Image 1 (cartoon, rainbow, N blue to C red):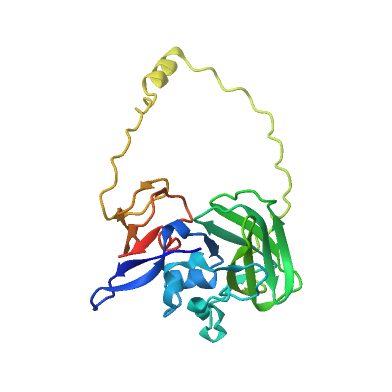
Image 2: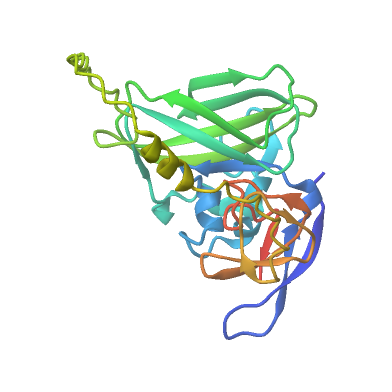
Length: 270
């Protein structure tokens, strides 16, 4: 069961207030790119989303649902198609990238358009990595489509739900295959270069670039420094990212795709 704790948030031009946010210990996962609806809310690209902007990883409900919000009233905004959710332009296939802040053992990953399952990936109960990617064919679909991405947990009756809005058509994100090229012509025979004289050899030896000394380990970044991948952060550490300040909510070693704007389970805007 997801626990909740109170975190203070400071709004611009307003006094401090408190909101109920998902506990980092109960964090789970969501589709970060193409951005799901909850990712768009967390990134601030869609305004007035309510609680989901602070816990995009928490859209959890019973398996077998076909709703964007897992039937959770507090996340009802995710079902609101009148919000004109931005759609990502893609081609005939798309790669969905998940960020997992708790790596639950997994049965399957399912992708639906309407009531049609267009792809399934079976993990057989294995624990996934911190980031997971699936390439899904969109053959037979065009125009604006909403894909429901579902992460089915192996050892519980629950799943996590994400709606991803796409614009399927030419000019999308499929990687083109490289065109065939003719093989390079074989080089013609040339006369051998004369051997260097003893003087030239000595000069070349004297001008060799010396080997660089090993670099020393950088000291820890000061509080408020820019977020960086490969850095160990502890609860209470403050970083800046994309012009905003974030405070660490859960100790971790950062990786790319765990930027603060995408992982509100790890970072709290301050």
